Every structure is written in C-alpha cells, then in structure tokens.
Length: 335
Image 1: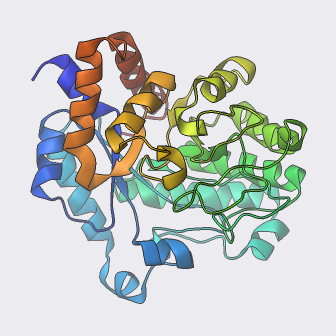
Image 2 (image 1 turned 135 degrees about the vertical axis):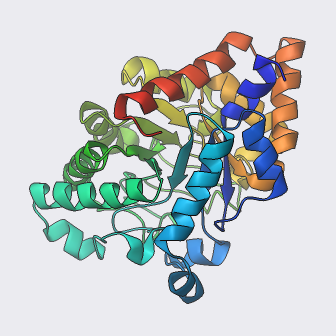
C-alpha cells in the first residue's frame, strides 16, 4: 500500500462497543490504521451508564489484552474512550469516578486535578491514551443530546472544572478532548438522530467560547467539533465539516492541537451526503481524526483515497492531519 492509502486509514477513529478486534479491524491496523475508540452501546449512551453485564464482565486484563494486540499490528497506536467528568464513564469501576454533577461542583480545583490524574494513570495502565472528554458545552436552553453530560450552566464553573480536569489527565499522559466546538447551548433536537440546529446569535455563543479559550490556555491537546448546524457561525455546513468553524478554531482561538470530528453518521452531520462524502468533507475542512462506526472503515478509506486521486482533497491536507495527531500525541507520549 502507498502512503496515501495508509494515511487515509491513519486519520480514522473507528468506534466499537466491545473489546474484541474483528477481522476488518485487524486488517485496518495492518494497513495503516492507528486509532480506535472503545465506545458503548446506544442503550448505554442514552442511559449515561455502562450496563450491569459490562460492569460484571469487563476486566482490566481485557483492556490490556486488546491494547497489546493492536500494538502488535500497528505503530503509534492511540486508543480512546469516553471518560467524561459527571457524564459517560466508559471505564466504569476500573478507574475512580467524579460522582454526579453536584459532587463535582463541590470539589476544589486541586482535588479535581488529582482525581483526574489518577483516572488518567489508571487509563494508561489499561493501554488507553485519549479521553473524549470533558464535555464543555454551556447549556442555557434545550439540549436533549447532552442532557446529563454537561458540567454546569455557569461558564465560569465549567471553565474551572475543565482546566483542572485537563491538567490532571494530561499530566498522567492521556490526551484530553474538549467538546463540542463551537458550543451547543440550545439545540432543536438530538443531532445524532435528527436534523438539529443550534439556535441563537453569535453573541449567544460567547460564554461557551470563553470556556474553549480557557481549555486551550490550559493546554488541551484535542478539541472535538460538533455534529449540528450552527447558523451563527456557518449557515451551510455542520460544524465537523465546516471550514469556517475549523478556521475560527485555528486562527481566532489559536488552537494547534488535534481536531476530532463528531460521528460522521449523525443525521445532523450527513444532510444528504453519504458517510464517505461526509468524511472527505471533514478532512478537507481541517479535521485531523474522523469518528466513524467501525463497520464503515473500508468504505470511508476508499472515499478519502479517491478524493486525493481526483484532486478534490489535497494530499498535503491528509498528510498534515496525520502529522498533527503525531505531534500532539508525542508531546504527551501517549503511544
């Protein structure tokens, strides 16, 4: 395989809801893949809790076994999962918890940092190098998508907790991911399953912008863009495939870390495009890692390669995405 074909796989972040590699995933890692998201089932995602069956059956050695198998097939591997303070905790009892939102809000900065550091340390022992968290959206209106996953409605409190969490996690060598830029303070529905838009003006986004700036100042290594349309920033393209949105994050906010797309198969993200077209659009707009269902790996990789060959997607953009993930991962030595 040539460098284009391998790089097309190196920008993918396929999600699985188990701790087993399928034949397709083994081939993906053999052919250039580097990243994997250990996700959860839809029921677990909706309930914000790992199932009793998972909690009873998953052991630390299962995570380590998977990480070892991936490392035997690929270089510079990064295993990610959702570990959100007061939100989805994919590691369930295998790492300390922050408890509920009220408990988290009552904690002092240093206590949050120390707890986050311990969670990060446990994760590293399991072979995990990236958290898709914290959720930093500041809700002021309706948001069925993020209900039960956000930190507070006060932007100052969200920023405080975010800074401490990032500091603790990253001091343990795990990349933190602040999500979901540019903020989803008031959404018309659940973008995973509906054509949801973020309501309001650019001024309504400002409290959330302050939190993202605070996260960047704290040294966050990754930021995830959202799946919904945010007309106040870009009236045409959902954030994860919006060049305007990603340019704002790079140029106006000065962010040099990894930009992760949200799920490319989200209804609000697709808007008439195929999964492959959406993935190409996200990379072209400036995303460095593309979150997708594991079943779509080969189709997405083919679309990216075809876009390079046709000239629709500049080869240097793909190479830059791979390099950006490497640079920021190396900074924390997450491999």
